[in-house]
Length: 256
Ligand SMILES: [Ca+2]
Image (cartoon, rainbow, N blue to C red; front, top):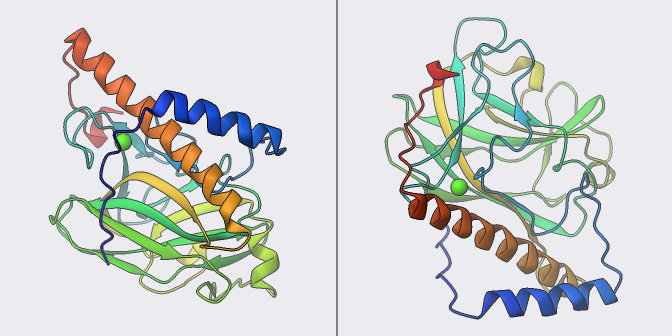
């Protein structure tokens, strides 16, 4: 499933962001840096943003500094599975930091994905709550097809329980997420039962999208603010790199 990418805005972003930030602050929208927020986005311009595949993985997720959906100097996250057994055998990565907390009021995760290895992958997001997990439907990503924008529904009606360790109350689980996990997972297996796979997944612009309408109006404003902040910061960093004229060598998974 592909989602049309938004057109670039020509509004005076700095003034607009300042005004919106002041309005949200006045309404009491204080933020917790460790808690998930509607509208937040990982663009990987400054690194791996807390994504990992375990301390002992020989192929941990890595920032690739160029070749993202926006082309040259758009960084993205590379997730490698080596097959076989043991650490690093699966195409999977987890985040225990900014993607933990309360997902109530969100409707979907949107993300740019690509598969640069030879075999198609089936990607799901797991929302882990201590000893149980709920999981999205799988989205197929075709090998060698380049970047595509895909959406994963995360409302209680769209999520399913993980096969071996499902949560008794999906809505309650959504309000108490302790880990977000992206993986090649043809079946909604438990995270511990994911299939060892040789594959390379690219991920960029992972964004938490609000439910439309109703109480979502304020969430939408907060989300727009966060997205604009991220996009503007990424653009400034890319412009700075291009202005500096420094050449940045590409990295492969073997360079880490
Ligand atoms: Ca990026």
